[in-house]
Structures are given as structure tokens and as C-alpha cells.
Length: 176
Image 1 (cartoon, rainbow, N blue to C red):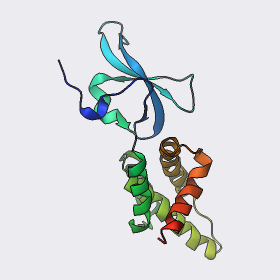
Image 2: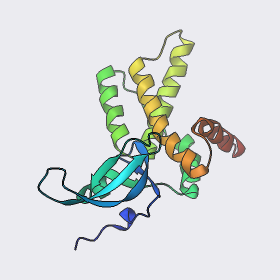
Image 3: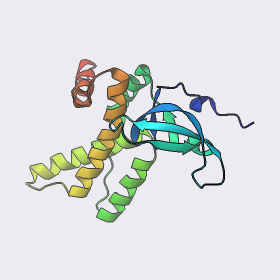
Image 4: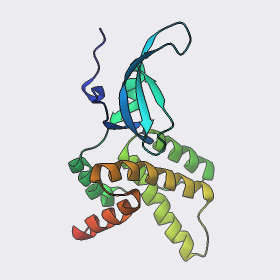
């Protein structure tokens, strides 16, 4: 019998990140024949923002598709490291778009923070010049924020709309 990694040993009702993008509740393990012939084992996930949707993740894809949530201490550590992440900028729009899209798919919080800091700092500079930030850059930044805010709000027990202020206050309290 194939042994699951420690990361994927889940308890029913536990929340996880699916595909690095979506906060979901684990609702159990089920046998299904989605192709009509071959029965496989699937993990059932329900998105936290849409109870009527369901994702079934094949057991052989669990380690690449599902990640346990960070602990509170890990969230605090991620927040505390934010000022140390140096922004990057690519002047070529296509190069920047491809780099940021790749970072979004990485499921790495330092990469997500890199996107947010980079677009935020560039936007601030553009605003000082009387220019606007591109819609693509805004969308990528909002996507990165949404991923982080979903998980942080759940782990910290606050609403998604409170996460940005929580981060700001934590960084201010530490004089960072």
C-alpha cells in the first residue's frame, strides 16, 4: 500500500490550500470512477468561499496539489520577513508578466510577497510621476494578496479585510 507523506495526513474538516491558490476544507477520502471504468481514491475538498463547489484530488496528486496551512508562528515569521524581501522589476511587460505568473504558481509565500512589494513600490513611483499601474500588474498583485490573505485570515482568526491592517500593525509594532 502506498504510504502518504506526513504533510497529506489530513483530518476531516481540516482546512488546506489547494493548488496554492484556494483555501479549502478537507471533507474525506472517497473511491470514485470518474472515467467510468477505473476506481481511484480521491480527496474531497470544498472551497471556503463556495460551499456548492467541490474538488476531487486523486490520491497520487495529493502532495503536489494540497498543502497544510501554516501555523500561527509560521504566519508571524512570514510577516516579520516581509521587509527583507527585495522587490524586483522587469521593464519589459511580457517578461514581467511571465516572471510574476511563474511566481504565483510557485506556492511560495516569499515569491507572493515579492510580487506584492514589487508592484506596490512600482505603483507608488508611477503615481508620483502621474502615471497609472497597468491592469495586468494590479491583477497579479491582487491575486498574490488574495492567496496570502485567505490563509492568514483563517489561521489568525480574523477576516480577510483585516489581514492588511494586521500585517501593517505587526510590522509597525516591531519597528520594521
